[in-house]
Image 1 (cartoon, one colour):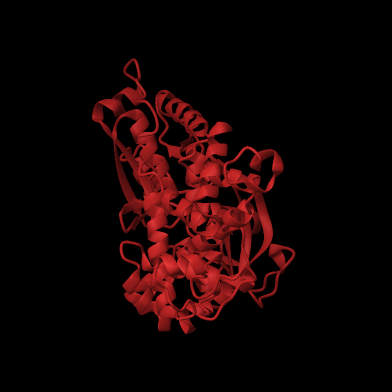
Image 2 (cartoon, rainbow, N blue to C red):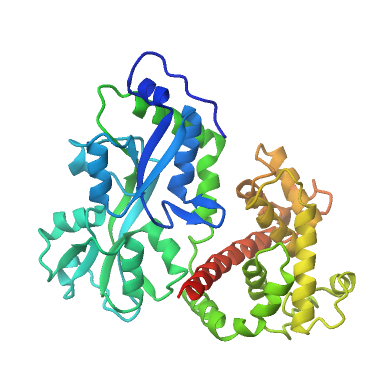
Length: 437
């Protein structure tokens, strides 16, 4: 729990919620909102809501819906306290809903597939645009083009925003609209998606609440979001869910997906065998960043093989032939596991994993230097989002002269970790889709 509990006084809407002991929230399924991960519920919205419930000192109950309309209707009928869908404020609905403070801003874009015409205006599009019924994208098209007519645009209840993006990527639809958060996450899976015209920029995202006889719940939101920003919660969640996907490289993403299908199968059994307590897909993502899964890869600095081991590291882990893929994967996985075990035990995952990756690239000593700089500058040395900001300082004399281990290419280590995070997310998604099909 990141925050102290809120203690309302007087019998207002918030006091009634506190007496009930439960915060009831409606949301939609999706990678930006709420989904069931390997260790339980996940999602940017879910974690933010979990912290808000902790702040209020109540239990969080999340009710995922399949449509915007259904979630809104349950809010109107008083069955929910909040709906949190990651969508922007709909100013046409302010007679039905109140909104908390904006906590993110997104852009709305036209999205199409590589090879499809990129129009300058919506009026130029000669194929129907498809969006999710009840979404802010549907409201945008209604305001620009009038009522849906099946020729210019229409809305669907059968697909969510992520499915529509996939259908565009697969060539089954020509155009859709989506916000910048969803696009950033989906383009690492479907690099053929192109982003066209920005239809609205810098739109506020906020939670919707049922109009109350007082503003006590909204006031609690304002106080919570203020503390959340001061405590760095937004930075932590932004980095966890979006920080590694803001940069996009079409050629690299497409090449990686191709390699998953054509190259990885030969090495998958060894990644699984030697990963131990690690996720084999993380080790595979590391190996792709290191060598693009090329057993004979060699760098100018003399590191070699699938996991790019130095002579000393290979010797430490009994790797006789660094270009033998099985030996390299075993040695690299064991070495990485040892690095992770030496990261302070108080540091939780995923921060612990990201720091261990940085150590694999520049060494534990330089990582510790960056953590010391982080603490000296008022940051949290146990949070990756704070440490990664200081890694580039290891290149600058004014900073590295203060450190124990001196100069290091910390900027490269930061990029190294972000690349692996992107590869890992893509590989997890493709692997789960492969095993479920």
